[in-house]
Image (tube, rainbow, N blue to C red):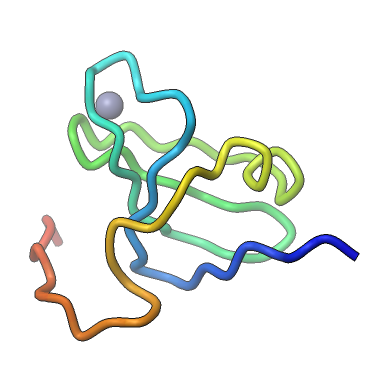
Amino acid sequence: MAARVNISLGDEVMLKKPHPCGCNVWVVKRVGMDIKLECSGCHHVVTMDRASFEKRYRGHVSGQSSDSPDVGGEK
Ligand SMILES: [Zn+2]
């Protein structure tokens, strides 16, 4: 079984392809059957299924293992 990408709400992840706005940091907004990501550059929201997400996933920027400082988004 392939390793699953471990993500949780509020994590910041990079995808293989940056968003057209030039930003490649996405904030995880929902985790479930579908993954909802918000572009941290332009706040565009995309939803994709987990398999598609795992294909595009490149790495974490923050979240997961850390007490890294929160960038304090909008909200
Ligand atoms: Zn964007």
